Length: 306
Image 1 (tube, one colour):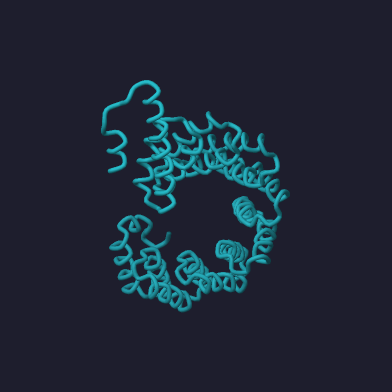
Image 2 (cartoon, rainbow, N blue to C red; image 1 turned 120 degrees about the horizontal axis):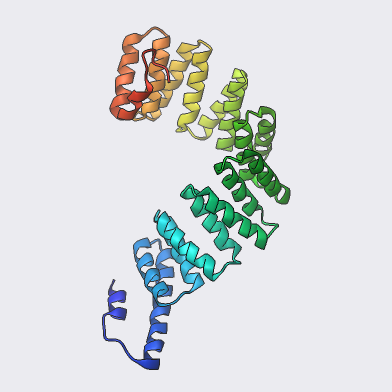
């Protein structure tokens, strides 16, 4: 703040001298803000870049300011800056894609879709633009078009693993298991330890009744990441459906040793205990789940089912 006081604390020069002083002030604020951003001093970076952008509409300054706002989770501020930047530099694909990502954070899928179409209009070979457009279409409940857009992204870049993952998720949402598994297998062929792909494959295999395949995927997930809550919950629930309550209890207990503050795991183990005939243990776990997360009590009914 000493810099800001030094720059703006004195009297204002006049005429050309004032313009020259404003130019110097702008340069100092801009580059001090950029340096602060690079050093992760985000509060100070934001103050400098805000002051610089108040002095001059400069596209680079606004791009850095938007980036700082995103890092600070000031998403509304980033959106305002990016909308202004789009007006200044409408043909900048990088700006349009950043705007699309910020719209996605705000769940403004219409704005995201519009930004993606502008980016595609500027660069029809940009795989990321089609990928983000696919996400916008999904947010707008146009899943067939989401598949079309993600397919276009993959046609431009066959190594674009997030596009395979997203298309698989959309396909599975439409219960197209075969096609979804094909996309997941392409991911796993490139990266056998890709956590999200393994988890989705385990989910699909479990739904298809392939317990062995599902367990293999879920065990791999917890091998890669022992703190993946979803893998334990899915495996425990699947074992309960098979009547293997003892094995399910082992899964939940193992997970709770790693994550003792996890209400969902206590809830899952409580259900497994009830199904196994251990009512006292079930009530104990249910109480613990509610203690950790009072909202979790709303998901219980008389039969202790979700």
